[in-house]
Length: 257
Image 1 (tube, helix red, strand yellow):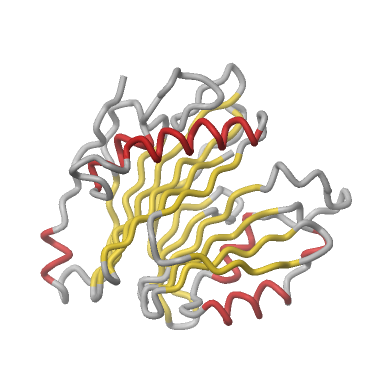
Image 2: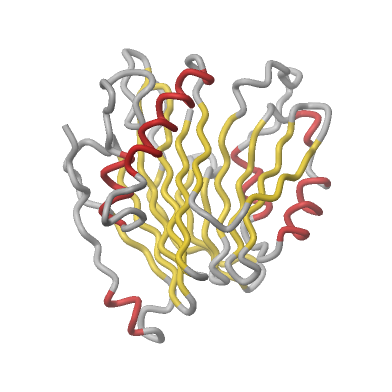
């Protein structure tokens, strides 16, 4: 249950993600910088270590959504989908991700879709695993959304996609403020299909925003519903070495009724 929005401008891009989960799930930890084989990666994480989104210091990012429309399920001894992004988080080229995925125990992993953004190549990739085949899709370097839901995924995707397309003509489309309004949206009504999702047993539990440009990568994170008023937590690479990083605002999340 997630909504992911990608918006590029040249080699710069923004990526935003709502994470929807059951309310009984343990809260995740906010983003921190991790050193992995001499490389730096930013991501939030589950208390058990897994994650659903990452940004590395090459500017490449990954985001994973569960594939609920695919009915197949792995055996009882499943490998966590939260380990998929962890395994590939340092990759800066799609071929690296493919090789990493092929080495994972996918036969024990529930279906997923993994989105990869690689600004050095202006490449957008999507890997799909359905317990039988791992396929790789190539998408244009252009605005796009990926949507999933454990509650009537096709209808949730239709409703959220309509909202996304209705807002694409806004003067500030693609800006941080626009992304925050979109991901806090309850249009056409607050509930299981709205981008900021609310159900009796589940809700949007966090919002993550990536701002990547040459020499400067920033991840902002907000626990809880995007329609709330808690401040965004900001983490960035090389702030002292790249003054432009210090100029990037950490604006509070806009509220959307």
